Amino acid sequence: MTSPSQDGRITTAGTALPLRSGRRAIAVPALTTAASLLGLLLLWSFAAGAWPSRAFPPPDQVWRVLLNDTATGELPYHLGVTLGRVAAAFIVAMVVGSVIGVLLGIHRRADQFFNPWVVLFLNIPALVIIVLAYVWFGLNEAAAIGAVAVNKIPNVVVTMREGARALDPRYAEMAAVYRFGPLDRLRHILLPQLQPYLAAASRSGIALIWKIVLVVELLGRSNGVGFQIYLHFQLFDVAAILAYTLAFVAVMLLIELLLVQPVERHATRWRRRPA
Image (spheres, rainbow, N blue to C red):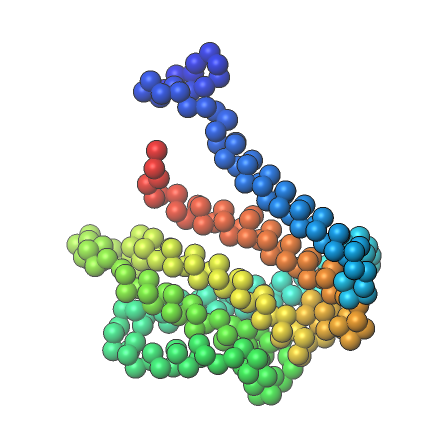
């Protein structure tokens, strides 16, 4: 039983729990992160001022390029194109890799047969797959997205295969006793046990895919952040290179903080947490 006390705290079974503890737990890491980024910015400014060079522009110059390209619409357009490719490749890689990984984890003989294939694709350099995709299928959007997905699928397969191997057979027996249908088995038996592995594959997938997308755009597309970085590299415009790079990294960090982490917390809300 809980009851409020006079000093604004909640008493539970004789123990006073501060109402501000939750806010403090959120505010302290945020302030620490902000202070860390501010320190990095100050260090960058000091280094650029101490050793002035065209190859190492100060933060204010990069900021001016960022504002100018945002005002003209160049930066939002190329960011949107790249994010679309990242999303498409991510969905394809996660769906295909998860299905293959779970099937290999459940069926041992199939895993033994296809394991050399998985090892082979894990060790093929991303650059080789991108070049072959462009040679075989042309410089088009399908080849670009497919090349990125193929680079990520083996990693998803390995992660989800381990998750399928760790499935508890007692839950499958319970589902058989209560005559669960395929959808109920997927929703209540399979997905909750695979959730940690899905989260790991998703997080590593986003980090890997957006980097490969930039290479794909650099080699064979006429738009996107990777294309812009290549264009400014030819002009030796380091400020523009850093502006597009930091803008895209900032967007990916926002996706991590505002989308990936909330979805992960929602998916694991059923787990028992320490008091």
